[in-house]
Image (cartoon, rainbow, N blue to C red; front, side, top):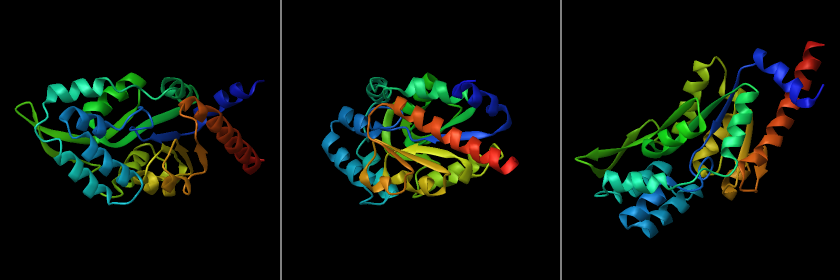
Length: 236
């Protein structure tokens, strides 16, 4: 019996949940930076984004400051800019693999519904949670609302979604790249830093430098094998 077949036999008896960040994880860009370029304020916003991802400034403050720069950008131009953002290489293959071995997939992003809903549909993500840019008369107002506007709000969303599936955050796998993922890295059973900022790596079980999500597949396979062996020992 092959290793992959062993994994397939186990999936029906186990609840599994994996959580992804979106920007620079499932897609190969930072959503707000692309919107800023479209609004002609790319340098200003990119500088704030970089400081926030390094953990140099508070996430909530950084989000408010960056979104404020987007005031006046048309919804049409915003959508056009976001549709150009490519998926991260290997994203489709990784999500397909995860579903084949029984994982529920979740995207918890401080980004925006204008992008996250599209990405969620392209990849077939089971749960998508992100923020919403406020639009009035077809123009961005420079304001944002949603469940992920506060510091450590990703942790609260993780708790809620995990509870819906009858498992604890401590049983989940998380994949991310920036400082705002630290709160969920601390809670998860297994944390994967993908092409990440140095500040996040100290909280990770595995650090992946290669910018291709297919590199996560053998990591998950190894995790599954280790988890199965532990279960066998406990049940012996």
